[in-house]
Amino acid sequence: MCGIVGYVGPQQAGRILLDGLSKLEYRGYDSAGIAVRDNDRPIEIVKAKGRLKVLAEKTNNGDALRGTTGIGHTRWATHGEPSVTNAHPHHSNDSSVVAVHNGIIENYQEIRDKLTRHNYTFYSETDTEAFVNLIDYYYKKYSMGPIDAISKAMVRVRGSYAIAVLFKDYPNEIYAARKDNPMIIGVKDGASYLASDVPAILNYTRNIYYIDNLEIARLTPGEVHFFNIDGDEVEKESVEIKWDAKAAEKNGYEHFMIKEIHEQPQAVRDTINSLVKDDKIDFTEAGLTDEIIGKINRIYIVSCGSSYHVGVAARYNIEKLAGIPVHVELASEFRYRSMPMDPESLFIVISQSGETADTLAALRLAKEQGLSTLAIVNVVGSTIAREADHVIYTMAGPEIAVATTKAYSAQLIVTYLIAIQFALVRGRIDEERYTALLTEMQTLPKKITRIFEDTERIQWFAAKHSNDKDIFFIGRGLDYGISMEGSLKLKEVSYIHSEATAAGELKHGTISLIENGTLVVGILTQNELIEKMLSNMEEVKSRGAYVLGLTTYGNYKTEDVADFTVYIPRTEEMFTPSLAIIPLQLLAYYISVSRGLDVDKPRNLAKSVTVE
Ligand code: F6R
Image (cartoon, rainbow, N blue to C red; front, side, top):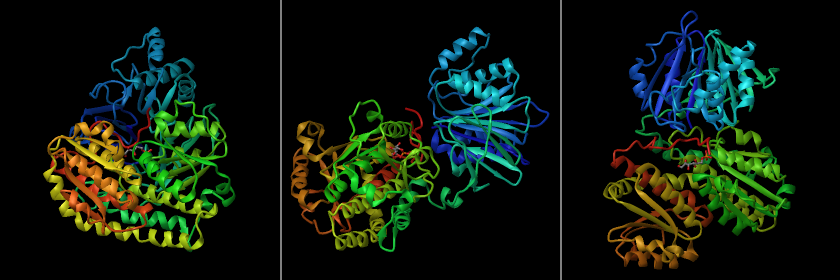
């Protein structure tokens, strides 16, 4: 939520800042702003409400501001409505300090009150303005320089932040600090960069530093120094990022979402290949030994949104194949429950960004209770990846569209591998079954590609239903997990109301919403549940529903009930989520396109939810 960038180097900063922000717009897009300065000139701030392109127009793509040092921000409003006044950068009362901030300062009112007593005034409703003035207050009170002023302010604020600060008295320098919000720093060819996420600086450098929680960085042209909160310098090694810069571009596709949908065969293949070596699952890099796996009594899977839906699917597979009880919890709920947990369990968190605030809080709670933790994460070096005991990376590459597709698919693969490996180690399957499952898993990329051949039919169907008021998804077992994801995908990008209901629950309430013509998507890929699903589909149809059946080739009885049927290739039942989700992603995408919506940046959403 919110994206920040910074540049200090030999070139004009404006254009570089806007380019970086364009890669971060998925993090927030209600307003944006940049602050640029040159040696002898005051810090100049330009802000605009709305998408980044408004700021780009206002600043002639950044060229209208002169200076080689600058910071920028794209906002997802938390405190204060989206407006030019509330947009970042914010400045202190006399403009000695200017900053951009991602996160939330919880005690900002208390800080405003304190500063008001010292004659500070405020022009915006933001928590950031309080933070900036607090830094200014300590800077002037102690005259010990920027690092000290920032660290004193860090001690005083509660909440989360990634902040980049310019000081009027320190030209050619940017100061940065973070707590529980992401920030990376890159250095190359006499220039230094900072950003909330890697794609923002991938065009300039692949060598990046991770600034840790409660650390401060000083960026000068081509150099960066790190300090802990006591002001002592900390040594750090840079890490080389292997992502291809092109992966963060649209490459001729109309939207990132459709590009990323089409990248799924590759994401699935790369994730399998990173974890299956010589036809054996290899979790050694994650440190998940057979001894650890053998001892686990129970598994908790805790995450948010689509990552939570991966957990729901994983529960069915792990319980069925490996025979381990699995509890799946929403991180935002889990963190405020007092759930007694079995100490001999594995606590799994799943997160594309590795920064989701609730998931991170859940991970920390589990660690406090002494549980062994495993993170399934896409973004290398993210906070969750760094804090978990064991990490398995999904190989989806940078995901830009706000609605996740390829990261979801890559996460599913990791959960299949966990189910299979745990089943083998615990003697629930033999080598033959193990090999058969892995062999079938390798066919998934090709099978996903085959589903794309049906795109035109789905596109036609989507156009026909683009004005629907409500769309329901029903399924049982694993198909219920897929329904949840299909429904979320649809509602987030199309703004059509949608619900996923466990098909057996229909009669307990939801069926009363079915009217003449209401679209119900029935998912039926699990053999032992097909008859039951067909009856549920009959029930809604006899109440006027228009039924889409999503099933595997061979289940032709579906056509007796469904008005429109979409087939996916046959596979091991445990892998069907990887195939069934594809037509649902396409459906959501094409409905959004038919409605003329901003598919990649749906209203009110942000890709990385770093606030509660
Ligand atoms: C939906 C979507 C979100 C995320 C959720 C968790 O398309 O992208 O629901 O799945 O915000 O994010 P991560 O996986 O980054 O923790």
